Amino acid sequence: MPKTQLKKLFVEKFRALSNVEIEFGDHITVVCGKNGTSKSSILGIAAQIFSFEKDYIKGSALSFRQITGGLFKSQYSEHFRISDKFDCPGSMTVNIELHDGYTDKDATARLELMKRGKLPRPVVRNNSTVEKGGNTSRNFTHPVIFLSLKRLYPIADRDYKVIDFDYLKQHEQEFIGLTNELLNRQSSVATGTEGTINSAVAHGENYDQDSVSAGEDNAGQIVLALMSFRKLKEEYADYKGGLLLIDEADAGLFPTAQINLIKILDRECNALNLQVIMTSHSPTLIEYAYEKSQQYRRKYKTVYLSNTYGNVQVAQNWSWPQISADIHTRTVSTTAEVRLPSVNVYFEDKEAADFFAALMNRQPIKKFTQPLTEISLGCSNYLQLIQKGVSEFSEKSVVCLDSDTSDKVNGKGYKTVVLLPGSLPPDQLIFEHLYNLPANDVFWKNVLGYARPNFTNSAAEIIREFAVNGATVDVKERLNTYQGTGKPREIFKRFYKDPDFQQLFTTVSKPFNPWMHWIKNNPAASNEFLEQFKSALHHAMKVGYSVDAAKLTILDIKLKKVT
Image (tube, rainbow, N blue to C red; front, side, top):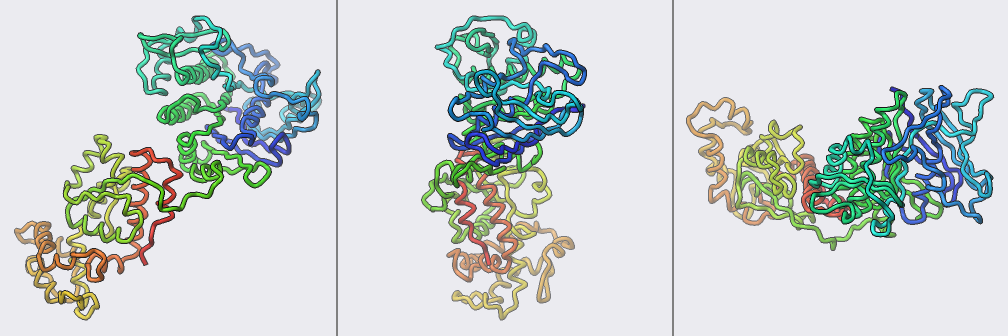
């Protein structure tokens, strides 16, 4: 089904905007920036382009209404306050690119400020969908709901009365369900009000519309707008989608509700062919939208308006750390003084913990970790805890599993799980590495006098049981051909715990530490692990501890590469 969608605005001039191009997402666009960067003006321009009073293709009038009785159109006085002194004719020129659902063609137009009556007003010019000889100074046909800051008018100061809106009464449970989903509440009653602002709110049995919070009221108006588009789609056979504009979308909503709002809007954009453009100052909302824009580049856009370098400029798809630095007029933090939580790190056994300790040697991010070396669980146990949603393991910690568990982990989307480097469990990996070192390797000339014969003596059981001979060994091959009665994993663990062998691990940073030697000889695998661990640590801090993403840039800057 053809749908109308706003693609681009090129603002040649209007107030603080000069030669600024703004590209919109197919679903959700978040416009953000400092005060005075014309964020709300972008919404006003988008609202001004459209009207919904006539289908110019069929020549028929359109009389559809929102649930509360309002038009699917924003009057220019609702989204622009015109200045007699500065907003004079000729002071606005905006080039428009969109896809028109009624002609199913890409279209262009210009928006200009012209003298109409006592004050200038924005007028669409050169509408490319108009046939030759027709009036090209007309808006595009498209339903619009503009939720301005007027919706935040204090409840206590409003003049209103309770009223039953017919559609709301018929679909009360849908309204309550959407509001509960947004606010993570269990409201059971919906009440409509008419007066200063026509609205509706979901609430419990123990309080009513007179005692709801500003956030509940804001949520109610957003849900009403979505359901109004749903009503329109049901009633209008030639429905081509709609445009929802929300100024300061996060107002009154706590962080989880802000994320829920984006999720709900995305779903409704799919169901109702909606396009949503909103302004926001919320780090939570902006960063979530940015992450979505990296996954779905056509659906989501974050547009940051910055006047740091003089005239307002557009930064398309900036992440929150970049936006935060600009808003706070500072550089992205690189100091080691940023306070971050200490994240628990879990392992399958002591061998894995030793390996991890060597990998973290001299890494500044080490101070943000709390290795729990005394706790040992199997891979299946950890994965079960994560699958069951136990937050300690699914959100707040990092679980380091042996690399031989890759078939259970890869592609499963476990955000808090990382695999240790190599292709074998740690005890088998270090045996293979040391066995394959020649007797004259510098490693064997350590101050402990632990030479290759000492090693083969510590590993005598492995060498005997798996018929290891020659200068090198392929442990996987030996395991595959093993026909003995012993348990291979226990045999390797006994080798690793040999008292003489354990002397090499007394200080992790010493050059004769076997793990340090392995890491030095396997820089690519080690660095790959560090990157994966950093991502898991980042996720745990952000999701498990709600750390502002701007603070987490220190993890990116301070990662020390293995060479």
